[in-house]
Image (cartoon, rainbow, N blue to C red):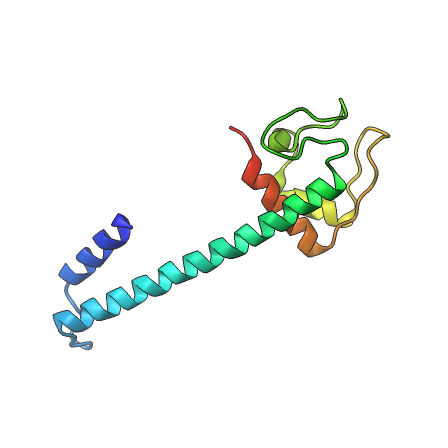
Amino acid sequence: MWNLVRLCHSLLKAPCPPQFKLTHYQRLWAILTIGFMLAGLSTALGARSGALERQGRALAERMCARCHATGNSGPSAHNAAPAFRELSRRVDLDSFANRLRYGLVSGHPDMPTFRFSREDARALTAYLRSIQGP
């Protein structure tokens, strides 16, 4: 929020190009309008991201929790199944969504092959990103 205030302050002090001929109040009004629009966009994107994470969590709990620890704590039920909160140490999450879409195959025989829709792959990956530990 303070960065937005600093930006508005610096824009008010900056010289205005002569072709615009805006008064101080018109510039203030334009800056505030743009600031509120950006804040609204940020909120909308955050809500979309939150919805994807919730969908991904539901998928993880439904399809993976039998073997994997799918939350922020606790061990995996299956010894060979990595905890989802540590998955970024083993796989590249940037390419993981594609692996989910085209058939995730693991090196151990207990892991079934999964194929996810594009939306489900994005959702699960968003959830995985949200729970990665340090």
